Amino acid sequence: MFNQVKILRVLQLISLLKKQPPKSIKSLAGFLENTERTVYRYLDLIRELGFDLQKDDQNRFLIVGDIDTEENNFTPEEASLLNELLLTSGNKSALKDSLLRKIYLKSELSIQGNNLVNAHLGKLIEKLSFAIENNKQVILKSYHSASTQSITDRLVEPIKFTDNYSSLCAYEVETKENKYFKLERMTEVVVQERSFKFKNFHQFIDLDPFGYAPTNNPAVDIELILNLRAYILIKEEFPFVMTFIKPEARDKYRLKIKANDPKPVLRFIMGLLDDIIIVGSIEFEEYILEYVNKLFMFREDD
Image (cartoon, rainbow, N blue to C red; front, side, top):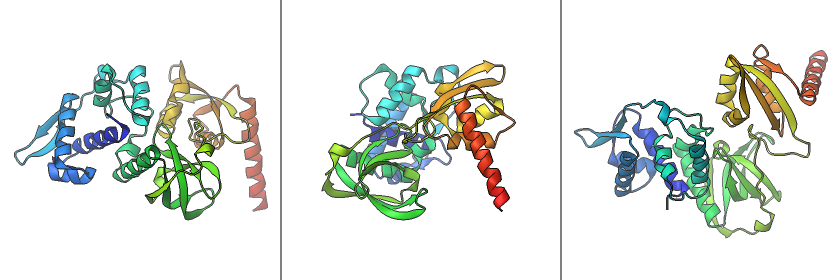
Protein backbone atom coordinates (compact mmCIF):
# COMPACT_ATOMS: atom_id res chain seq x y z
CA MET A 1 0.00 0.00 0.00
CA PHE A 2 1.48 3.31 -1.12
CA ASN A 3 0.48 5.13 2.06
CA GLN A 4 1.28 8.64 3.24
CA VAL A 5 4.37 7.62 5.23
CA LYS A 6 5.97 6.03 2.17
CA ILE A 7 5.16 9.11 0.10
CA LEU A 8 6.74 11.29 2.77
CA ARG A 9 9.94 9.23 2.70
CA VAL A 10 10.12 9.37 -1.10
CA LEU A 11 9.73 13.17 -0.91
CA GLN A 12 12.49 13.39 1.68
CA LEU A 13 14.76 11.18 -0.39
CA ILE A 14 14.19 13.12 -3.62
CA SER A 15 14.94 16.42 -1.88
CA LEU A 16 18.08 15.01 -0.26
CA LEU A 17 19.42 13.46 -3.45
CA LYS A 18 19.00 16.69 -5.44
CA LYS A 19 21.56 18.41 -3.20
CA GLN A 20 25.34 18.00 -3.39
CA PRO A 21 27.32 16.03 -2.37
CA PRO A 22 26.28 12.52 -3.44
CA LYS A 23 24.95 10.36 -0.59
CA SER A 24 25.91 6.84 0.45
CA ILE A 25 23.30 4.15 1.06
CA LYS A 26 24.33 4.04 4.72
CA SER A 27 23.79 7.79 5.18
CA LEU A 28 20.43 7.66 3.39
CA ALA A 29 19.31 4.77 5.58
CA GLY A 30 20.34 6.71 8.67
CA PHE A 31 18.52 9.84 7.54
CA LEU A 32 15.28 7.94 6.88
CA GLU A 33 15.77 5.65 9.91
CA ASN A 34 15.23 2.67 7.64
CA THR A 35 17.12 -0.34 6.35
CA GLU A 36 19.56 -0.16 3.44
CA ARG A 37 17.42 -2.69 1.59
CA THR A 38 14.42 -0.37 1.86
CA VAL A 39 16.51 2.56 0.58
CA TYR A 40 17.45 0.54 -2.53
CA ARG A 41 13.74 -0.06 -3.18
CA TYR A 42 13.07 3.67 -2.92
CA LEU A 43 15.93 4.38 -5.34
CA ASP A 44 14.43 1.94 -7.85
CA LEU A 45 11.10 3.75 -7.56
CA ILE A 46 12.76 7.14 -8.09
CA ARG A 47 14.37 5.83 -11.29
CA GLU A 48 11.03 4.49 -12.51
CA LEU A 49 9.50 7.91 -11.93
CA GLY A 50 11.96 9.38 -14.43
CA PHE A 51 14.56 11.07 -12.24
CA ASP A 52 18.16 10.95 -13.50
CA LEU A 53 19.65 9.09 -10.55
CA GLN A 54 23.42 8.70 -10.91
CA LYS A 55 25.90 6.61 -8.92
CA ASP A 56 29.57 7.59 -8.58
CA ASP A 57 32.60 5.29 -8.26
CA GLN A 58 32.17 5.21 -4.47
CA ASN A 59 28.60 3.88 -4.71
CA ARG A 60 27.10 7.24 -3.71
CA PHE A 61 23.91 8.54 -5.31
CA LEU A 62 22.72 11.91 -6.64
CA ILE A 63 19.82 13.15 -8.76
CA VAL A 64 21.23 15.24 -11.61
CA GLY A 65 19.63 17.55 -14.15
CA ASP A 66 16.74 19.94 -13.78
CA ILE A 67 13.72 19.33 -15.97
CA ASP A 68 11.72 22.51 -16.45
CA THR A 69 9.28 21.96 -19.25
CA GLU A 70 5.62 22.75 -19.57
CA GLU A 71 4.67 19.08 -19.25
CA ASN A 72 5.99 19.05 -15.70
CA ASN A 73 3.42 21.55 -14.46
CA PHE A 74 0.77 19.98 -12.25
CA THR A 75 -2.63 19.48 -13.80
CA PRO A 76 -5.66 20.14 -11.57
CA GLU A 77 -6.33 16.39 -11.56
CA GLU A 78 -2.81 15.63 -10.33
CA ALA A 79 -2.95 18.29 -7.63
CA SER A 80 -6.25 16.87 -6.41
CA LEU A 81 -4.86 13.36 -6.34
CA LEU A 82 -1.81 14.53 -4.39
CA ASN A 83 -4.02 15.68 -1.53
CA GLU A 84 -5.70 12.29 -1.48
CA LEU A 85 -2.37 10.46 -1.51
CA LEU A 86 -1.01 12.52 1.35
CA LEU A 87 -4.09 12.46 3.52
CA THR A 88 -5.19 8.87 3.04
CA SER A 89 -3.78 6.06 0.91
CA GLY A 90 -3.18 6.24 -2.79
CA ASN A 91 -5.27 4.07 -5.08
CA LYS A 92 -3.84 2.62 -8.27
CA SER A 93 -3.92 5.35 -10.87
CA ALA A 94 -2.12 6.33 -14.05
CA LEU A 95 -1.68 9.79 -12.53
CA LYS A 96 0.32 8.56 -9.53
CA ASP A 97 3.71 8.06 -11.21
CA SER A 98 3.45 11.33 -13.12
CA LEU A 99 2.48 13.10 -9.93
CA LEU A 100 5.41 11.92 -7.82
CA ARG A 101 7.88 12.65 -10.60
CA LYS A 102 6.83 16.31 -10.63
CA ILE A 103 6.70 16.96 -6.89
CA TYR A 104 9.88 19.03 -6.73
CA LEU A 105 9.71 20.43 -10.22
CA LYS A 106 8.04 23.62 -11.41
CA SER A 107 4.44 23.78 -10.22
CA GLU A 108 1.76 25.96 -8.64
CA LEU A 109 1.01 23.27 -6.07
CA SER A 110 -0.28 24.80 -2.87
CA ILE A 111 1.63 22.62 -0.45
CA GLN A 112 4.51 23.68 1.76
CA GLY A 113 7.34 21.44 0.61
CA ASN A 114 9.68 22.53 3.38
CA ASN A 115 7.29 21.06 5.93
CA LEU A 116 7.35 17.71 4.16
CA VAL A 117 11.08 17.34 3.67
CA ASN A 118 12.23 18.64 7.05
CA ALA A 119 13.62 15.60 8.85
CA HIS A 120 12.34 16.57 12.29
CA LEU A 121 8.85 17.37 11.07
CA GLY A 122 8.85 14.19 9.04
CA LYS A 123 9.42 12.11 12.16
CA LEU A 124 6.63 13.95 13.96
CA ILE A 125 4.28 13.24 11.05
CA GLU A 126 5.16 9.54 11.13
CA LYS A 127 4.45 9.24 14.86
CA LEU A 128 1.21 11.19 14.62
CA SER A 129 0.11 9.17 11.59
CA PHE A 130 0.69 5.98 13.58
CA ALA A 131 -1.35 7.36 16.48
CA ILE A 132 -4.22 8.38 14.20
CA GLU A 133 -4.31 4.99 12.48
CA ASN A 134 -4.18 3.10 15.80
CA ASN A 135 -6.43 5.43 17.86
CA LYS A 136 -3.68 6.24 20.38
CA GLN A 137 -3.37 9.29 22.59
CA VAL A 138 -0.15 11.30 22.31
CA ILE A 139 1.71 13.88 24.36
CA LEU A 140 2.95 16.94 22.48
CA LYS A 141 6.10 17.66 24.47
CA SER A 142 6.99 21.29 25.23
CA TYR A 143 4.43 22.71 22.84
CA HIS A 144 5.05 26.43 22.22
CA SER A 145 1.72 28.26 22.30
CA ALA A 146 1.50 31.76 20.84
CA SER A 147 -2.01 32.40 22.22
CA THR A 148 -1.21 31.52 25.85
CA GLN A 149 2.50 32.43 25.60
CA SER A 150 3.45 29.22 27.35
CA ILE A 151 5.51 26.07 26.78
CA THR A 152 3.70 23.01 28.15
CA ASP A 153 3.05 19.32 27.47
CA ARG A 154 -0.34 18.66 25.85
CA LEU A 155 -2.19 15.34 26.07
CA VAL A 156 -4.28 15.03 22.91
CA GLU A 157 -6.10 12.59 20.69
CA PRO A 158 -4.90 13.34 17.12
CA ILE A 159 -7.63 13.48 14.49
CA LYS A 160 -6.29 14.69 11.15
CA PHE A 161 -3.61 16.81 9.49
CA THR A 162 -4.40 19.95 7.55
CA ASP A 163 -3.85 19.61 3.80
CA ASN A 164 -0.35 21.08 3.86
CA TYR A 165 0.73 19.09 6.92
CA SER A 166 1.60 22.30 8.78
CA SER A 167 -0.98 21.70 11.55
CA LEU A 168 -2.68 18.87 13.40
CA CYS A 169 -6.30 18.88 14.46
CA ALA A 170 -6.61 17.11 17.81
CA TYR A 171 -8.90 16.78 20.80
CA GLU A 172 -7.15 18.16 23.90
CA VAL A 173 -8.04 16.08 26.95
CA GLU A 174 -7.54 18.80 29.58
CA THR A 175 -9.65 21.52 27.92
CA LYS A 176 -12.08 19.07 26.27
CA GLU A 177 -11.81 21.01 23.00
CA ASN A 178 -10.87 20.28 19.41
CA LYS A 179 -7.86 22.47 18.57
CA TYR A 180 -5.22 22.98 15.91
CA PHE A 181 -1.56 22.49 16.81
CA LYS A 182 1.25 23.65 14.52
CA LEU A 183 3.88 20.98 13.90
CA GLU A 184 6.71 23.51 13.99
CA ARG A 185 5.80 24.32 17.61
CA MET A 186 6.06 20.68 18.74
CA THR A 187 9.35 19.71 20.36
CA GLU A 188 8.55 16.00 20.41
CA VAL A 189 5.63 13.59 20.06
CA VAL A 190 5.29 10.69 22.50
CA VAL A 191 2.73 8.04 21.53
CA GLN A 192 0.89 6.63 24.57
CA GLU A 193 -0.35 3.12 25.23
CA ARG A 194 -3.78 4.54 26.06
CA SER A 195 -6.38 4.35 23.31
CA PHE A 196 -8.81 7.14 22.45
CA LYS A 197 -11.36 7.83 25.21
CA PHE A 198 -13.18 10.79 23.67
CA LYS A 199 -13.62 9.80 20.02
CA ASN A 200 -17.30 10.77 20.08
CA PHE A 201 -16.20 14.37 20.65
CA HIS A 202 -13.70 14.48 17.79
CA GLN A 203 -14.50 17.09 15.16
CA PHE A 204 -12.42 18.23 12.20
CA ILE A 205 -13.18 21.59 10.63
CA ASP A 206 -11.16 22.78 7.66
CA LEU A 207 -9.03 25.87 8.14
CA ASP A 208 -9.42 28.79 5.79
CA PRO A 209 -6.65 29.39 3.20
CA PHE A 210 -4.87 31.63 5.73
CA GLY A 211 -4.63 28.80 8.26
CA TYR A 212 -7.34 29.96 10.71
CA ALA A 213 -10.19 27.90 12.13
CA PRO A 214 -13.81 29.16 12.24
CA THR A 215 -14.74 31.28 15.26
CA ASN A 216 -18.01 32.38 16.81
CA ASN A 217 -17.91 35.38 14.49
CA PRO A 218 -19.02 35.00 10.85
CA ALA A 219 -16.36 34.73 8.15
CA VAL A 220 -15.33 38.04 6.58
CA ASP A 221 -15.68 38.66 2.84
CA ILE A 222 -12.44 40.04 1.42
CA GLU A 223 -11.84 41.36 -2.09
CA LEU A 224 -8.53 42.88 -3.15
CA ILE A 225 -6.77 44.01 -6.32
CA LEU A 226 -3.09 43.02 -6.22
CA ASN A 227 -0.26 44.23 -8.40
CA LEU A 228 2.43 41.79 -9.50
CA ARG A 229 4.56 42.36 -6.39
CA ALA A 230 1.67 41.70 -4.02
CA TYR A 231 0.60 38.69 -6.07
CA ILE A 232 4.04 37.10 -5.82
CA LEU A 233 4.35 37.76 -2.10
CA ILE A 234 0.89 36.45 -1.17
CA LYS A 235 1.58 33.38 -3.28
CA GLU A 236 4.69 32.70 -1.19
CA GLU A 237 3.17 33.50 2.21
CA PHE A 238 -0.31 31.98 1.75
CA PRO A 239 -0.08 29.42 -1.10
CA PHE A 240 -3.61 28.08 -0.53
CA VAL A 241 -5.19 31.39 -1.61
CA MET A 242 -4.02 30.87 -5.19
CA THR A 243 -7.25 29.14 -6.22
CA PHE A 244 -9.12 32.30 -5.21
CA ILE A 245 -7.04 34.67 -7.35
CA LYS A 246 -7.97 35.51 -10.95
CA PRO A 247 -6.04 37.65 -13.47
CA GLU A 248 -7.72 41.05 -13.71
CA ALA A 249 -5.58 42.88 -16.28
CA ARG A 250 -1.94 43.18 -17.19
CA ASP A 251 0.00 42.70 -13.94
CA LYS A 252 -3.24 43.00 -11.93
CA TYR A 253 -4.91 40.20 -9.97
CA ARG A 254 -8.20 40.00 -8.05
CA LEU A 255 -8.45 38.06 -4.78
CA LYS A 256 -11.98 37.24 -3.64
CA ILE A 257 -12.22 35.07 -0.56
CA LYS A 258 -13.80 34.46 2.87
CA ALA A 259 -11.51 34.56 5.90
CA ASN A 260 -12.34 33.15 9.31
CA ASP A 261 -10.06 35.76 10.83
CA PRO A 262 -9.08 38.93 8.91
CA LYS A 263 -5.94 39.58 10.99
CA PRO A 264 -3.42 37.82 8.68
CA VAL A 265 -4.89 39.60 5.65
CA LEU A 266 -4.70 42.93 7.46
CA ARG A 267 -1.06 42.36 8.41
CA PHE A 268 -0.27 41.50 4.79
CA ILE A 269 -2.01 44.65 3.49
CA MET A 270 -0.32 46.95 6.01
CA GLY A 271 3.06 45.89 4.66
CA LEU A 272 2.04 46.52 1.05
CA LEU A 273 -0.16 49.62 1.14
CA ASP A 274 1.11 50.84 -2.24
CA ASP A 275 0.53 47.47 -3.93
CA ILE A 276 -3.03 46.56 -2.88
CA ILE A 277 -6.45 48.11 -3.48
CA ILE A 278 -9.38 47.08 -1.25
CA VAL A 279 -12.58 46.73 -3.31
CA GLY A 280 -16.13 45.44 -2.87
CA SER A 281 -15.76 44.53 0.78
CA ILE A 282 -17.38 47.15 3.02
CA GLU A 283 -17.22 44.86 6.05
CA PHE A 284 -13.48 44.44 5.68
CA GLU A 285 -12.98 48.17 5.07
CA GLU A 286 -14.80 48.86 8.35
CA TYR A 287 -12.57 46.34 10.09
CA ILE A 288 -9.47 48.13 8.79
CA LEU A 289 -10.81 51.54 9.86
CA GLU A 290 -11.50 50.18 13.34
CA TYR A 291 -7.97 48.81 13.50
CA VAL A 292 -6.44 52.13 12.37
CA ASN A 293 -8.51 54.07 14.94
CA LYS A 294 -7.33 51.78 17.72
CA LEU A 295 -3.76 52.19 16.53
CA PHE A 296 -3.96 55.99 16.69
CA MET A 297 -5.65 55.85 20.12
CA PHE A 298 -2.81 53.67 21.35
CA ARG A 299 -0.24 56.16 20.09
CA GLU A 300 -2.06 59.06 21.74
CA ASP A 301 -2.03 57.22 25.07
CA ASP A 302 1.73 56.80 24.73
